[in-house]
Length: 261
Image (tube, rainbow, N blue to C red; front, side):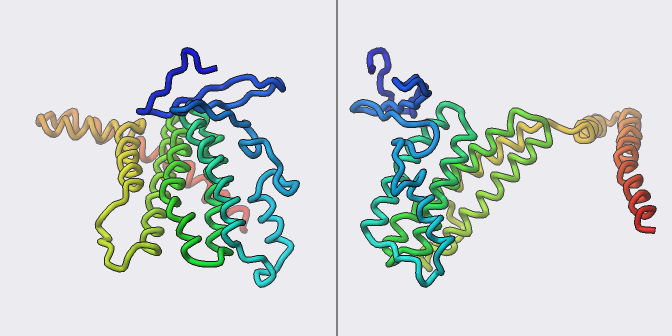
C-alpha cells in the first residue's frame, strides 16, 4: 500500500482510494504509515450511541433537555469528543490537500460546533481551554476553504471570498479578546490571523478589476503623463458607465413607488 508513496514532512499528502466495499475512501500518508477514512459521516465509519457522530448525539440531547438538565461534560465525555474532533481534523486537512473545499467547510464546522458544545457544558474552565485553544486554527481553515471555493469565479465571487476572510479575522480577534491574558498586547497578531491577513492581501491584489476600476487606473496613468485629452475622454466614459449602472436602481425605485401607490 505504501510502495511508491513516500512520506513528505513538508506537506500534507493524501489520496482517494476505492475501498473493498466499493466506496471511495481517503488515505492520509503519515511517517509511520497511513490513516484511511470515510468520506461521509464519522471518519472511522462508527455510529456512537446510534448517531452519525457524538456531536449529533449531544445536539439531540440539547434539543430535548433544558440547560439545567443537560449533563455536565466531564473528562471522559470530553475525551471522547476530543477523539472525534481529531478524526475530523485529519480528514479536513486531507480534504484541503485534495482541494475538496466543500468537505473542509463541512468538517471544520463540525469541529467548531464541538468547541461551542464544550464551552457551554464542560465542568471546568481547564477542560474548556483544552478545546477552545484550537478555535483560531479551525476558524482559519474554514475561512480558507470558503475563500478557495470562490476564487475561481468572477469578481462578485471574489468579493464573497474577501468577506469570508474578513469575517474570520474579526472572529479570531474577538476570540483573543475574550481568552487572552489581560496583559496581552492588542496590537500583536496570532499566527492564524497573520495567515488570514496575507490571504486577504492576495485576494485583493488578484481579484478581477471592474470596468470602472480599469477606466480609473487608465485615467490616473493618463494624468500622470499629462495626456489630459485622453484623461478627459476616460472621465466621460466613466460618467456614462456610472449613469448606466444607476438606471436599473431608478427603474426599481419607480416600480416600487407604483406598487406602493
